[in-house]
Each structure stands twice: as C-alpha cells, then as structure tokens.
Length: 138
Ligand SMILES: [Zn+2]
Image (cartoon, rainbow, N blue to C red; front, side):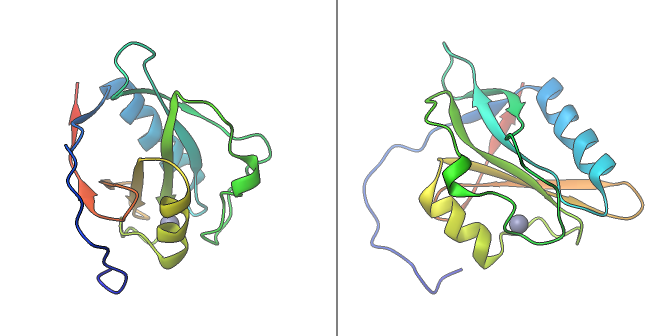
C-alpha cells in the first residue's frame, strides 16, 4: 500500500451493503475451508445494485494455500458480479500484492476474511485500489 498511489479523481463513493445471510455464508465457508483459502465472487441484487446478496462459486476454483486462487480468464462477464471474496487462513484480513493486482483488474468491491485456528473471523472490504471501504450489514 502506498507505493502505487494514483492521482485522486473526483467520484462519489458507493455505500455498499451486504445481507447478514450472505455474510454468514461467507464466514461459514471460510471456516470450513480452513486451513485452506475459500474464494468466490460477490453478486448484487438486480434492483439494488449496491447490495451484495449472494456468493457465486467459480467453476474450477480450488481452494489452496497460495493467494492466486482467482484466474482472470475464469471470471464471467456478468454485471451483477461486482467483486470477489476470499479468506486468509493467516487470520490477517489485509490484501497481499497478488490480491491488489487482482483488485485492480477485476471488480469494484472485494472482501477478505481472516480466519484463526480457533474459528473466529474478522473481515474487511476494499475497493479496486486496495483502499478499505465500509459495507453496511442489512
Ligand atoms: Zn489474499
């Protein structure tokens, strides 16, 4: 972070929302994948286009202990898919270099879930530049 800071441009930040149900599913999937990573895409409601309502598993996505679990050629052209979610078994919900590279190429909102061996989770969301953003839970 900070090394590749771009010039600031004027834009209105989006207030992202996520349903509690969707978030619970993400946490459960992240915990059950431990100590491997869980990865999926985030899909928004077709009417409320800033409300994340479900996760979409990529065909052929394998959980692994490397960070390159998303392959760009597998990402669908689907405008209801707004970003990605994946877990970090390291428990640290901070994007790696590979994550930042992915964020800059695909999607507008990305969630990282930190999972500990004790089953507790923490999560953070980032925009395409890797800046932390808030998501309202509904
Ligand atoms: Zn990562």
